[in-house]
Length: 109
Image (cartoon, rainbow, N blue to C red):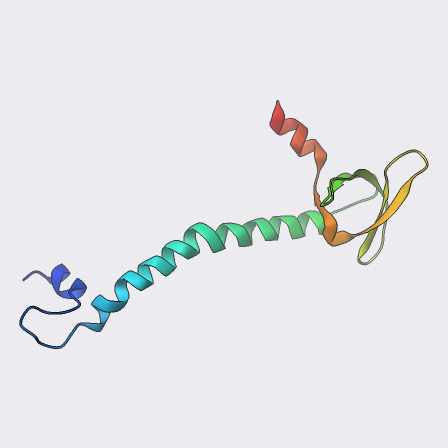
């Protein structure tokens, strides 16, 4: 019997004790795959979004989670004042800003 079959064998044919590594190896493999394809990319995306929000400056064009396009006129601790129209300014939470609209326009071309 080769070594690979010994590791993966959960119940031996001769009725001996089961190999605990063989029982947990599929579960460990599923967790690793889940981490690689789900958790790691999401954490990377969150980190990029946090860096974007921290680097906001006066004059930047942004989009909120509600789909409002605006230009940053002033920054506070947790709030951003956006100029939406010539006479319209909105104060929004900094966490509601999701992206730079110039990235969207470049991606469509």
